[in-house]
Image (cartoon, rainbow, N blue to C red):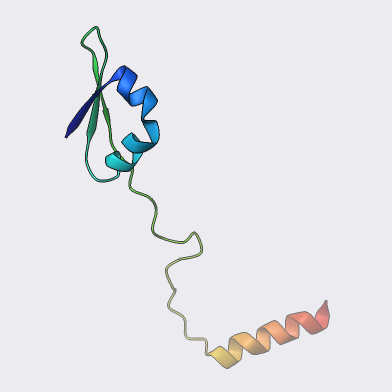
Length: 73
């Protein structure tokens, strides 16, 4: 863990963010209070990544239903 003063953190924010991706960064104020900076883990899943469902329908049944619905519209 790397420790920075408040002034150093302010002057080197982009550097701090890069470091925080790999390890925890501590920022200390002159009055002694300390803060930790860590990276949040990003979502790796797509919002379109949904679990499948079990059905007895075949692909041809689904395609036929779609074609039929398009003819009626």
